[in-house]
Length: 465
Image (tube, rainbow, N blue to C red; front, side):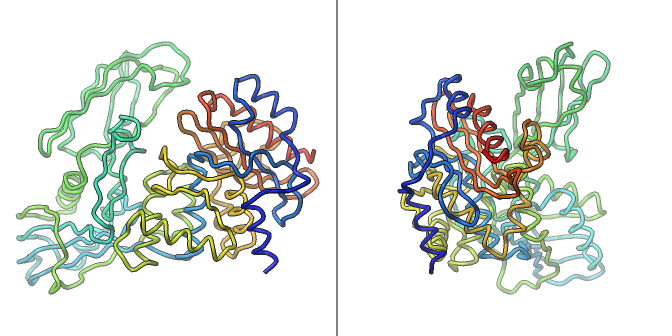
């Protein structure tokens, strides 16, 4: 009862002893033109008590990717760290001498990481079960999630960028091709991974003697699709000092991408497909031939938070309602599941707005106080080890690998960045062995210049000031 009350208090910070932002943080914000009114921050012991910093902590702000803290903690707590996503391969008709005189239905189960390599393993498993030739169709069943229209250009107009890929009950390989840039002579060779035969690649990139830095700045691409054929053309310049790099880009819509990948893999393992690849429902009379299980959720959450993978977070978010509300995964239903779950933790969060659970949104809102309450709840939960180990270690790995400061290796933090939004939320171990929940969010035109101020707060807490 007392713990729940403490969480409610944290979600509505009216602490009489709240302290202002430390001087190094205020000075760093002033230098980049971010007013204090645009910032929400809180620093509080993990076990509760008086906040060391409480600045606009109840103010609703766009949290960017720190909202993944809520999504992944909810997933671990409600579904369990050992939860797996299941993809079912069902056949109709009989298999005689390796020939299926019927259809193969693939029912997606929301797997966030059904990669090309894993689908290749699935194909071998199907072959091992006696399937060689499919005379019927391959049916793509996405009914685990509710139908939804996704516009990949809606957020920022970058429809090909992998971070804009939408959720899909049958998501294959993040619906992307990793284009690898390899300096060669005076030019750059570009390869696709997976190396789909229906994706043609042309490169007229020129090597230049420039620092690597933002290596994509001088690079342009144009992807043209005609049915199941796509041509990717890369032009511009590429710094020779960069060596090899990869850039994941989305090619084809969901159905054509799955068809491209499945046809290629199936042929690679010696299989034959005579029919079409089409969307549809798994026939009721079908017989399960094989079921593929994903990695445990705890492993997937590590990928989501370490590398801030948006589509994986969205997959987990929709799965919350698919598993806990008894309906096809739906954003509105998942929002209700999360709100009810927060109530059981004693976290009211009246300002919370969830759109897709990934932070790739202009609509999502959370206060620093709510994020801190969630982090404190997670610290006291049975899934704390899985969640905290999924956060980037400050200045060591993940999205925070390039950070520098006294707190290197002493903080597990989830960062967030959108144009006009910068955020950090997580745990900092100070020099006296005390652990603190630290959250700071800025919403302002100059917010993306405020990272030094955020690092200054993390360092200040770590030094035990």
